[in-house]
Each structure stands twice: as structure tokens, then as C-alpha cells.
Amino acid sequence: MPKSKFEQIIFTLCMVLVMVYGMVCYNVVLNTHVFNNSVFFAALHELPIMVPIAFILEALLVGRFAFHKASQLVDPKTSHPFHFVIAISVVTVICMCPLMSFAATLLFQREAVAANGFLGTWLKTIALNFPMALCYQLFYAGPFVRFLFSERNPLVRFLKKAN
Image (cartoon, rainbow, N blue to C red):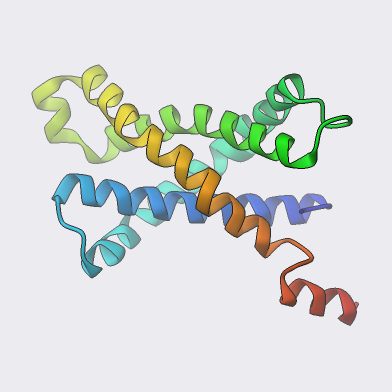
């Protein structure tokens, strides 16, 4: 896990990149009703827009709030560290999903907003994204990015030996 401020920034950037790419792929499938290799390329077009938005929201607002709320839910001093990580992940998804759905609704769903109104489209986007975001964070993205920063990663072990 990250120990310095620089490592925290890199960790946040990696988590944002993995989460945004996965969720954009999911939303491309929802919008096109097609799941093939083109989905992965189509999702790359939205990354330059959505990754900076997600990074700014996570770094400036949600990260601190999630840590604070998770500390209220789970005592990091007496509980197993895994429980605290899960609490942070859940609170982060609870906050980021509506915020990122808001951004996606504004930027990419003009036709749906024109037909159904902004509020209805935004709430539908949240409802469709939240279960996927929570499962993706808890079961795939979170463990993958934490592995990248863990002592179990051979590259991390190699770099520590090199220093």
C-alpha cells in the first residue's frame, strides 16, 4: 500500500484509470448492446475526458471523505486491515458513482436527457452503474491495484531490493 504522498497519488491514478476504463467499457456495452473487441477500443476515446474528472474528484473530495467515513464505520486500530480497506472502497463507490454518473450524463447522454430529462437520466445512470461499480471495485479493480502496490508483486520486491 502507498506510504508517501507521491505513492498515494500514483495509487489513486492507477485506481482511477482501472475503474474508469472498466466502467466506460460497461457503459459502452449498455449503450450499444454489443460486447465485442470494439468495446475496448471505443472506451479508450472517453478516457482522456473521464480520467481527469475522476482523479480530481477522488483526490480533492472523495478520498479524504471516504477515509474519514470508513474510520467512523470501522476502527482501523482494532479491526482487521481488510475490513478498513473494504469500508473505504464501499464509501468511495457510494460517493463516486453519483458524481461520475452526473459527469457522464452531462457529457455523453444528450439524446436521453432530451427525451427523459436530466434528473431521470442521471438517476437511471446511477441505478445501472452502482451495482457494477461496487462489484468491480470490490472483486476486480481494488484487488488488482492493491496487488500492484503490494509486497507480493515481484516487481515491487525487485525495486525494494534495488534500493
